[in-house]
Amino acid sequence: MREIANKSTFQQIKLVRKYLKLKVLEDNITFRKHEKARTHVYDIMRRTISAGESHSALMIGPRGSGKTTLINSVLNQLSNEVDLANDAIIVKLNGLVHHDEKISLKAITAQMQLENAIDGKVFGTFAEQLSYLLSCLTSGNDRQCRSMIFVLDEFDMFCHSGRTQTLLYNLFDITHAKQAPMCVMGITNRIDVMDLLEKRVKSRFSHRHIFIFPNDGSSPLENFKDIFSSLLSLPVVKHSKKRRKSSVHPEVQMEIDQDKSVSLPMAALDKCKVTPETFTALEPTFVEDWNAHIHSLSENEKVIDALEKFCYYNVNEQVFRNLMFTQICKLGPSKHYLESADFTQAIDNIVCPEYRIKLLQSLSILEFSLLIAMMHGSAIFDGQPLNFEMVLHRYTKFALANSTAQTVPRPVILKAFEHLQELELIVPVRGDHGTDVGGVQKEYRLHALSVPAVEIKEAAKGFKALPTEIMHWVNNEF
Image 1: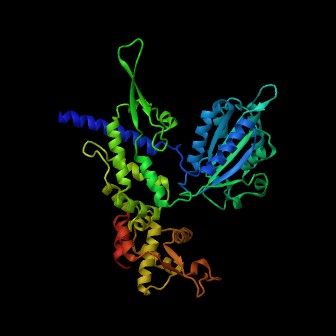
Image 2: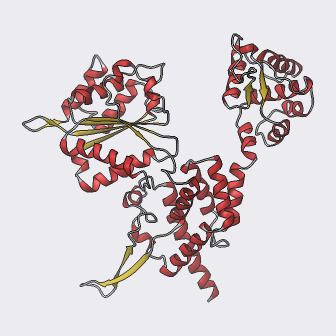
Image 3: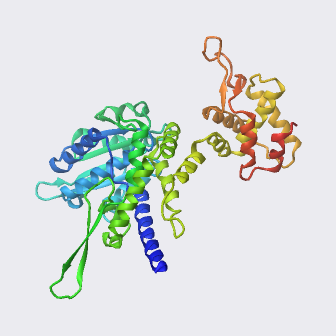
């Protein structure tokens, strides 16, 4: 009997683990808070699809604040209210992937499913091909065009100084001139993105900005407590039996409680090709016990302290989801429930004093070598600040003393030195009044090391693929 009970419990744990993994990894539709911003985006897209209006807007917020999830949530709601497949075309572009106009046009053509329409045709400009694509979408006697929604993720990458902004110009020009019902929604984490736009692009943009900031007015701790509970809770499952007319066996149906904060949307299940019937074996009593345990965890003082520590270092929900996923994967035959010690240890490994050590271990070999050179130089000069030339001298001395050390051009070393300054691992020395010392070339500006020597030596111990010579150099002066 004990073996049967253990087997039944393990089946429940497998279903719980599968459900929570889908919820943490695949649910990019469920959106919380920011109701005002969501309503604004919904109204823009709804008017584009239903009334044929043209709009453009920018959604600005830090990474992990929910910008992409908001768009997916609005599109999912619209798909349930209108015939989105036939009335509109959704085109999604990413500035990191579609880095030039040719690649962008190929992606636009593929998502419009018009590859055959332009097969063999030659176009002189980007605008000509885009106009031809729009003409292919018109239908009927009144030559009405289907509504289009362009979602431009990493919008600032489309404005990079090294590339023309032909794509943005043509899209904004169409919305400005109302040539076709189109909504252009840019997503970026740069608050100064307007400074990157060309004048001709700015003149055709609507200057509508939608700001998304973490926490939405609530405290970070309360926000992450809500995320913690909603991510790890299960929906209440109720089983009902309905007898079929032509069968003796009853049909088992599953009714899920309509609490959207804990249930998975159907779109996320369909994307993973999973049906709700997969979770019919979940027992209501087990679900209640699980939810009660998660609620007790959310009120546990150790978990609250760990969440508060996490909020202090990071407010990115995606990082928090990844942390939850690692804990869910630990569920198994020997571990039926999540424990508070697991979360506190996992959060401590991410954000505690090892945070800066992990940053040091993510540097390149050259950047880490420059830090070592600066550490030894500061020790020799009794903690006095050093400039680039002094650090370069010590690094060159080490490289010449070790035949295995790779020679690196001076401009590359200078670039690595500047990157250390961007990461604030080294900080420039300021004048008496707190201002930067002006009139000094960057190679001769004094910098101080902001990382203790103990942390540099600690980072060297766990640094992957660190050459043996550099490992000896950390503890011995050359």
